[in-house]
Structure formats: C-alpha cells, structure tokens
Length: 459
Image 1 (spheres, rainbow, N blue to C red):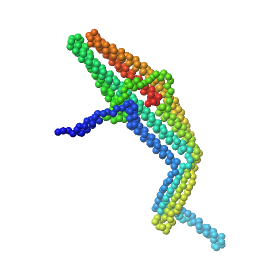
Image 2: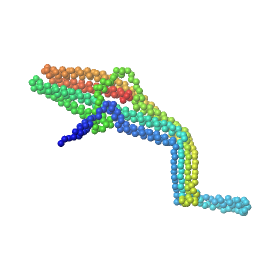
Image 3: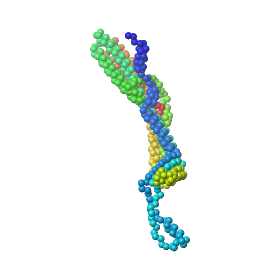
Image 4: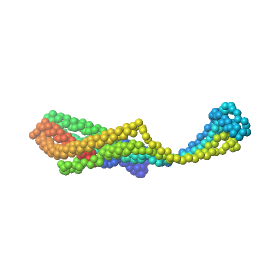
C-alpha cells in the first residue's frame, strides 16, 4: 500500500512546525511581557475605571431631569377640628344692621373639617442644575489628575516588569555560558581519558592517573546536570515574568559576551547627569504633590457659597371617587427658583481637613527629597560597580588565558611522560576556578550596567 505523498509532506510540515521554538531577544522578551503581563492589564483596567470616575464626578455639575408619580389612598381621611367662625360673623352683620336685636351668642361650635380626598394622584417633573460650587471645580481637576496618577502607576508597573525580565534573562545567559564551558571541559577530559587509557595499556602510567581523570570527568558531568536543572528553572522564572505559557518552550537569541562587548565605561569617570523625571516613581510623587495642592484648594473653596437652580411642573388629582369625572379634575402647579447655600460655621471641620492636607504635603515633600537622595546614591554605587566590573572582567580574562595555557602545556607534558597526573589535576582545578571567575565577572559587568540603567530610568 502506497502512502500518499501529500500526507507524508503534511506530517513533515506539522512535525517541523511543532519542533520550532519561539526565539526572543531581551528586548522582544520585554515587549512581550509588557504587552501580556496581568499586572499591566490590571493597570489598564484601573485607567478605564479612573475615566469613568471622572465622568461620574462631572455628572454632579450637569443638569438633572427627574420625574415622579405618587398615588395615595386614605382609608381614613385626615380631618381637623375647626370652630364655627361663620355664624358669629353673620350674626354680627345682622346685629349691626339692626335686622336682629343684639344678644349674647353662645360659644362657637367646633366641627370636623377635611382638606383631603380619599384618592390623591400626583405627577411631577423637575429640572435642576448646579450653578456654582467652588469645591466642585477643584474636585473635577483633581479627578483628572488622579487619572494621570493611575497612568503613572502603570508606568511604574511596566518599569518593574522590564527589570524583572532583564534579571531573569541574564540569569539564563550566565547559566548557558557556564554550560558551554563545562561542555568544552567534558570534551577535553573525555579526549584526555582516551589518551591516558592508551598510555596506561602501554605501561607508561599508573591506574591512579586514569582514575583521577575519570573522577574529574564524572564530577564535570554531574556539574553539567546541575546546570541543566538551573537553566530549566531560569526559563520557568523568565516565562513567569513575561506571562508566557509555562508549558510552552522558548529560546533566547542574545549572547552574554556580545552584550558585555557593547558596554562602554570610558566616560563613566565624568559626572552623570541625573534626570529624575526618567523614573516613573518620581513622576508619581510629583503628581501626588499636585493632588494635595488641588485638594487644599478644594477644601478652601468649600467656604464659598454654592448655588443651584431648579424648575418643576406638577399636576395633582384629588377625588373621593378616582374615576368620577364630575369631581374636580387635574390641578396644575409650576415653580422655578434658585437655592443658595451659605456656609457659616461647621465646627472647625474644614479647618481640620486643611491642616491634615498640609501635613500630607509636607510628608510628600520629604518623600520627594528622600527619593532624590536615594537615586543619587543608587547611580553612584552602580557607576562604581560598573567600573570595577569592567576592570575585573579584563583581569579575569587574562587569568583565564594564562590558566588555559598552563593546563594545555601541563597536559602535553603528562602525555609525553615528563609530567605527573597530580600536576594535571592541579592545573585543571585552577582552570575551572579561572573559568568560574571569568563567567562571574562577565555577569557582574552586565548586571552592573543593568543596575545603572535602572537607576537612571533608562530601562
């Protein structure tokens, strides 16, 4: 049975597509994280919420139109006691006109009288609008400024995400660089072991020499396994910081050595100009200051009178029998006016609010000064660490080259029978130490540059 060529081609293409892993440079990883991280999405939702809060606050000053309908049925109609004021008045006229002979009248009778009907139906439409309120004006400005604060907090979140991704990315690069060196060492040891075994079989070396190299090879292989586990953990951390699916694979395209070669420290001896506005935390502090100032103006403005205009139209229907058209019909009413509220004494409520805001303003100023000092210290330390890291890398590179030369010559002497395996072991240990120091120096250089960029707000 022949398998269709198209099916074979489809299987090949599918397997090839599955085997491909997305590759990220450091910048691509940062872009992915900023776009997909849940903290960014939450901040975006907070920004949208702030927009609706502004709309809600604006509605306080917008005209409002309300309608209402009210129906009441009195099971017992309210009544009031009323004196008979009509009879004395009539008799008084009759006595004055000599129609009747004046006489003493008895006390007026009291009878029950009601202004209510059993059924009462009314409807009303009212239009009202705020004319002036000083606290509303400043409150609206504060609401808009709050939206800016939310956006700045979002920038701070992005800043933290970028920093975390860079750190995670760099930890993988350092581990993979270590893995390359370990793999090279394994190849060298494996080759040396093969050669020493051949020499041993010729009777020129002892079995102890073979065992020493075998032990070094096994230890290096064990170190390789540990590095592989460390790299896997590093990738998981990077995926988490990027909000990348943990069950999917990815690879890195940047190289630690290439990044290190791009780092220039020649001009770091000069003073670095610090622009605090590059730090999103600083912008948030300044916005907080502006919010405190607006809040102070808002409370002070509440001492001023406020005015509201209104107009309403209503109709009411009052009948003993709601559906009897012979009784009185709808009674219209309409009115318009202005209500002015004049604050006179509030028990020092506003005074207390003003003093609290002034304290908040002083606290924010202290926080601002502390942040500026902290940034200066951060930049100074990062600058010093970068200079030291660059010098340390150059020194460790020279030491590594010397150790590689010593190890190579010691191995040749041993293979030629003029050196001992102990000398090889010592040279090997020194080489491994030099390799480790060089990789650490490489990492410290890149890490110091990253810390300086973070301090200057260039991430």
